Every structure is written in C-alpha cells, then in structure tokens.
Image 1 (cartoon, rainbow, N blue to C red):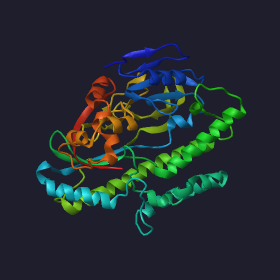
Image 2 (image 1 turned 60 degrees about the vertical axis):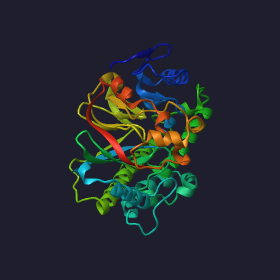
Image 3 (image 1 turned 135 degrees about the vertical axis):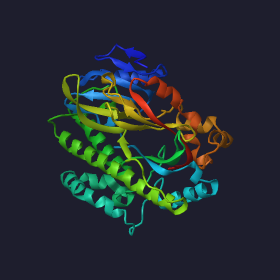
Image 4 (image 1 turned 180 degrees about the vertical axis):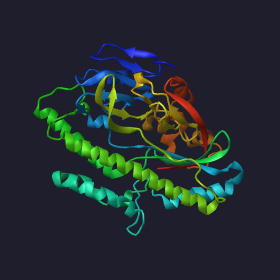
Length: 398
C-alpha cells in the first residue's frame, strides 16, 4: 500500500504509511521535518508511534548532522533469526518446557549478566581496543558507564523491556529461532553521554529547538566524529551480542530436541541505528528509529507481539521510504496504560498455546498493547515481500 498521509506544513513533507497515527506522533514528526538539515522528506512507517524526541517508526535522512536521541539509547537494537532442519513433528510440550527453562538458565535477562568465567566474555574482547580509544578521548565516559563497567559480561545477554527470545514455526512447520536485543547497558551509557553533550552544544550555540531531544551534532564540530565512532562501535557490539545469544539458544535447543542443523544463514538486522547512505542525489546520514533497511533484496525481520505472527521479509527498495520497512507491530498503548487496562487472565488468553511467562511482570508486553501486525504488513506491501510467516511456540521475555 502506498503512502496514506502526507504532512506538508513543515520545511519538508512527512510521508506516512498508515492512517493509524495519533496527533502527538504527528506533532513529533512535524518537529523533525522542520529542522534545517533534514533531507527531502521524513518517512513514517506503518508501526509509527510516539517516542523520545524522534518518533518510533521514523526514517530521517539528514545532511551533515546527526540527532543522537533519534538514534536512541538502545543503539543497534535489532533482530536475528535462523531456520533449523527440524519441524513441528520433532517438538512436544514437555521438550519445549525444558527448552524454555534451559534458555532462561543460559541467557541472562533483565539486568542479568554472565559470570566472570563464562567463555562468552572472549566474544567481547575484540571490542576493547575501540572502546579504550574512545574513553581515552572522553574519560568522563568511564564514570558514565557506572554499573555497566563490566560490559564484557553483558555480551550474550537479552536485557529487559520488549526484548525476547522465541522458538517459532513457519508456514511449513519448520522450526526457527528468533530474538530481539541490542547493545545492552554499555550502548545505553554511550547514548546518554552523547545526548547530554549535544544538549550542551545547543545551549552553548544558543540554538532553539522545539524539543531538547532533537539536539544534534553538525559535521565538523567538536563531538561529531567521536559520536559516529561511538555509535558504530555500539552497533557492531549489538550485532555480536545477538549472534552470541543465538549460539547459546541453539545450544539450549540441542540439549532437549532431536539433532538439527541451521539450514539458512542467520538474518541479523538493526532497527535503531544510523548509517551513511545515498538518497535523492545526496550522501546523507539515515537514522532508522524503529525501522529496518529494506533495499531491493535485503532480508529483514518484522516481529509481532508475544502472541502474534512475525515475518521474514525481503526488501523492495522503495525510494520514498529511503529503502526502509516497519520494524514490528508498534505499541498502541503505553506500558503503564497496558498494566492498568489488562489482567493476567487477559495475558493468559492472548498467549494461548505459547510457553512463556504469563504473570504480572510481563503484563506491559501483552499483545493487546500492540498494533495489529497483519495490518502493519498490509500497509507496507510496497516496501517488503513476505517470505516466511512465523508463529512462536516458546517466548522468553527480558
């Protein structure tokens, strides 16, 4: 489906791939579109909803400037998925419950991290020189890291919120493993540090903004290059973190399921990140805040909620979207509102058939708090082609 709404009262237009967008999100999109360095237009994906500074589900192309808060505090957050050789016939409820328990033992969630003697610490070692170079120039970062100073032990950990690990079945009853996570506490600390620097720069230069979370670094200024270096470090760490977790999950499955092989190369994609790209005759910085890259042929993952379908997709290279796609269902209700509106009985009903937590602690992640993923996919038919439809049988939440 093509663009459904266009906002035109700003310096550049906002093109929106849905008619399901609230007024506060429209206002936030308009603020972004009014910035002097935004290139050509702002694209809003069909899962668009209110964020901090920049709207989640937005794609922002900028000329010689980056907005750190638009990239966000979970730098490099994204998805990884892989298909296995086994099928639904190789699964039973008893084995899947063992898989759920094994994953929760092997992959720390929430604020958890690995112990000192975990071999996964070695997976973080290649990232040490880059981080040291950054902290040598910004020693204040070491203080900002605080409780995240043992960041090596967070490699291969899930985190909290909407992060998850799932075992799924596709339309042919083939088994998939899929998970969602990012750069963990270290990425959050890096993001917050540079967001504060950007705000200070705006105050020093007396630049007035409609929202202080739209503070930006122009190319050539004091902190721009260091932010680019830091954000790329965190993005690579996030991708390695997902791969490390995937390895742990596959090992957990191998302990309780029949022998299997991974039959497709893992799809590993960011949906909170910034990259240099070429669009509309210009080299620009593209920030995807809750959106995946969907150039022609790109493989991507668009997950639903913990009780809904998810999709493996191939990009169509739609220029109007800056070759992008939605990153998931998108929230229609805040976490606080979901906890007030739904009950544990609702959660039980909406996750029927899925082995997962069904307690008050994950009530804010209830499927009813999210938009309809099938409508999201229908709205972006001109952005992606669906390759596989997945439905979870196990879900481990952060």
